Image (cartoon, rainbow, N blue to C red):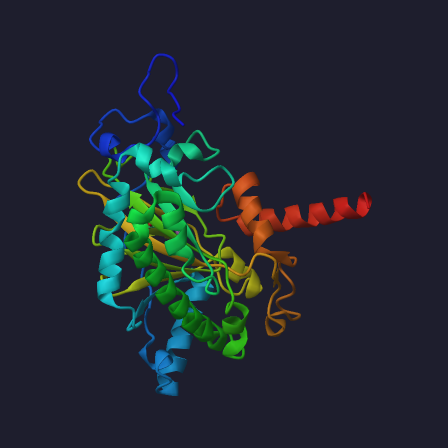
Length: 370
Ligand code: OGA
Ligand code: NI
């Protein structure tokens, strides 16, 4: 599928990073309006570094409580923190970054074997397969579905779409997802403790899950002051575990200002998504963030999005609903929020409020026409 620019310009508009990276004439669809253009030297965001060593090995309860307190403070403010001592093999993280080049370095026609269709969540996407025609992101992505109970789901998907040659490739991301799943369940324990709930509360809720791993590949861009790798959004998912390479580019909107989060090789950047914000009845924040690009080098990041099972009711923990903090959002399912963000709404800071209104409208429509 090839899209074309208006008649006076016949360059193919499929995003081909290897061509566009050195192009000084950027297609207008990638140019952001002046008031949304990035600043490349944003001040750094101060976020806590959470050592999860004690949590992982059932060690010092005081150390766990201290970690939970720091998480609580960060999540009430902007929802971002760093995680170290996480037990994920650094060789696996390195391989997961390196193997991205195997896929993204392919000819466009090869990558399109795994093309993601409009409305789908998995596969290869470049800017022009989406439903938008302006403010396009300067990136290519490859996304996988991960369910802990479906054996080798990532590996089999890759072989199914790309052929037997991609089994080893699929295996790397299968292993990476398994490591992320394990870590995210530990983090759910910590989040439960931090909210004064039973440590098993969220861990049990997410034991079965329907998650996503996304490989983000940002080619260099000759107009980095006018483009964005990923536009401002909040993650509609529950918990995001991001590993960015050494290049840097992640920015978070906090205190009315964009801030950067510098890469640290041994650390994961973790953030709360909209669905967890709803599970915490709005106590923990899902915050606006984006990725900027640069004119020197390609940037890579791995984003694991923990999500509930599709049809499980997302309802806040009873202990977090009270007179001071009444119900903020209606019950919903991840399937319906996903559909909302894919078909009706471009995810941003107000996603949850807009979605809540949409859910309530749908419910009143149902009542009006039984
Ligand atoms: C995302 C995201 C930021 C980055 O994939 O949702 O916010 O630094 N990525 O790649
Ligand atoms: Ni994000």
